[in-house]
Image (cartoon, rainbow, N blue to C red; front, side, top):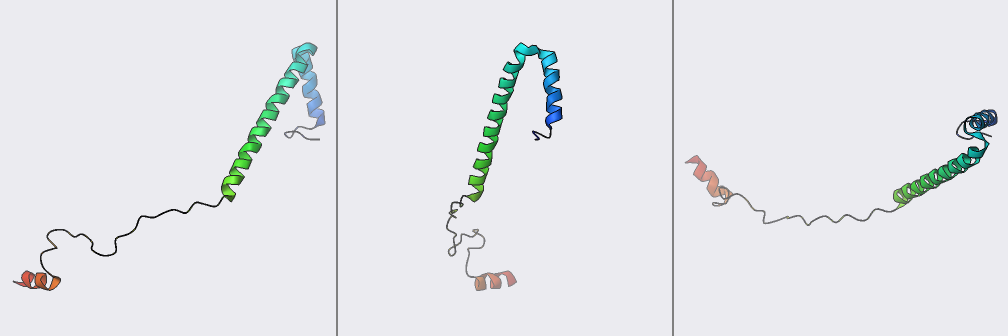
Amino acid sequence: MSVFGVGLPEMAVIAVVGLLVFGPRKLPELGRTLGKTLKAFQSASQEFSNAVMTETNAPEAPVSTPPQITSGAVSSPAESTGTPEQRSTEDKD
């Protein structure tokens, strides 16, 4: 049996040291508190794991793109004087 990489002999040593340090009256209370804390941590990590799995498996919503202008593009006033043929003859003069 291994909990958090701690085997049965190590858990026994920890329990004996805890018994010596905290005494027989406080040890059950500390054990209950530790158990509740570990249970809360386990449920929170499971909830987080489920949320991540849900998000990674959920299809993405289609992204709407704005319509693009394909004709009638706006140009600067300097470019809008005459047709390209007229501009090229004016540049030669």
